[in-house]
Length: 229
Image 1 (cartoon, rainbow, N blue to C red):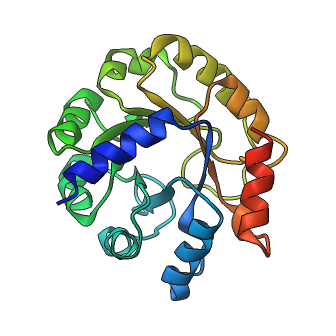
Image 2 (cartoon, one colour):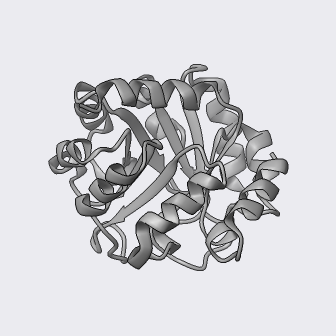
Image 3 (cartoon, rainbow, N blue to C red):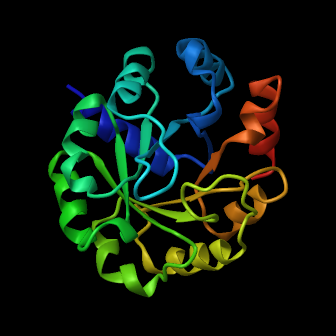
């Protein structure tokens, strides 16, 4: 059911200029549909969903039901970031729930290639995320299977961290290594002060949390961030 829309969503994201993607962690889940409508009105190009299991990272968030709920109320691309152990056991469920892109962490699996291949076989976009301490060299042999590479500018799953500039160096290096079709994404501490540097370094998808959800007007926040890219 989702196959054609997934392919269309990926193509649109690849062709679009830099896009601000709201991370739903800070949204009002008691009014999820209203929050999504506000984000749609703000002109966002996709939604970023952070799934944490309390094991790979210390925090526990949400799972397939929230992805399904988002899919029911919007046609926006759903960019699902799995910060979980053994993601290979869950990628099909997230695909069936309506994810367009499923991103796993290189640190969470023995063989990223195997899991990326599994995601691609499901006709989902395959993403690979790396924490600040993980080198580009360690994932080079997986890059050809990536529709997206997510560079974390903070350690996954820990709140209140400062943006780590090493992410900019990694984005620049990756831009030279990956194909033009491969999306580069950055997550963690992206705000008005850091977003331009991220985009200049090569990030096309810029994941933003508090710089949107802690502002009274989402449209104004998204517009101001977009104007800085």
